[in-house]
Image (tube, rainbow, N blue to C red; front, side):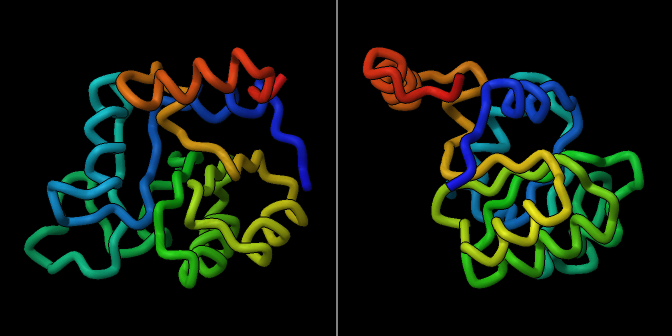
Length: 152
């Protein structure tokens, strides 16, 4: 398994514009919690969901990675695992070179595809823990720090 470094994480979170693939339209969802957290940290977010209706496609909501602005280079993948490989493929084709595949969205094939193209890939980690964590995420971060299991 690839070892993720703190430098890779820093490279991802340094980008101030992030697209979220698998952005839910439900206010009480994990992706909505992630989006709220990142907005509070002043990230500019793009939301990618193929199920957005035409009237929802305004400002920063798109149905496809292919329609993201060219300057969006960071993608957080929160899709069901069955969709992740296609999302990663589309991201690479679109020129996105920083991809974070959230836990539970990962697949071996998606990880292998990203590694073949040498994008900055983060996986097997939760983005909450590396973006000024609060609550339970801060607790998990502290435990990982105490037991020495944080990326170095």
